[in-house]
Amino acid sequence: MKFFIDTADIQEIRDWAGTGMLDGVTTNPSLVAKTGRDFLPLIEEICSVVDGPVSAEVTATDWETMVAEGHKLARIAMNIAVKVPLTPDGLRACKILTDEGTMVNVTLCFSPAQAILAAKAGATFVSPFAGRLDDIGHDGIALIAQIVEIYDLYPGIMTEVLAASIRSPKHVVEAAAAGSHVATLPPTVIEAMFKHPLTDKGLAAFLADWAKTGQSILTDGDTVQPLKRPA
Ligand code: E4P
Image (cartoon, rainbow, N blue to C red; front, side, top):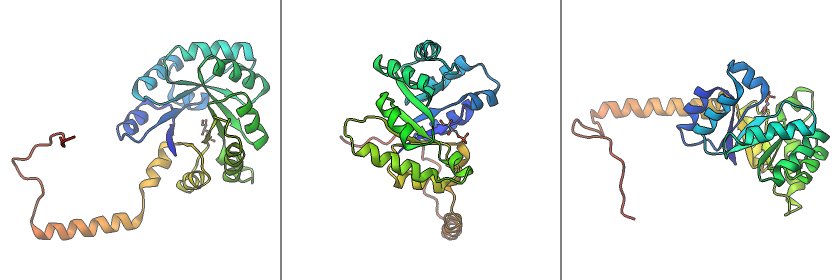
């Protein structure tokens, strides 16, 4: 499963991109508003940091203006995925943009019927919002599993399921087990995924025992060099 980061905070994106574990970025108007930055230069900067798809959302509601906004966004960088809402106009814009060769992320998907429509419109990604469904007493992960199951029945469907509105490591694991192609994760969730008390406890014990040996793997003469192995 690919990992996208769900933030518009450039510092968070830079930090996580440095780990080599990021496959892309998703933003939305709320996340951009939180940064206080101008949208277009911000998206350009994000695209220069991450090679994978960077979702940038249109803000028009009619398809003609969505397409015009999509063109402007797509001109920023090759890795832009234009994000459109799951509305009739959004899917019409999706079809036009994908036919032109631009990646499109269809967002705000809350039902399998909507996901079928997104696939028909040729979306690169469809984003079911797990957390927001859970919030109203529905089962967000069950929706993701159902969309994956339906898409798998039709080898012609190239749309990837992008698990969105992810709130916890449990959501990530369940989205992965459901076969979601991508999950977009808030930085707080990525951090939480690393944590386990037995890891902390075990590491503390190993380091305490190692200290008793008085040894050190690196000594004064050692420098950190790239490892070159014969091909
Ligand atoms: C991703 O593309 C969505 O914008 C995001 O996951 C929404 O998450 P939220 O429900 O936590 O706002």
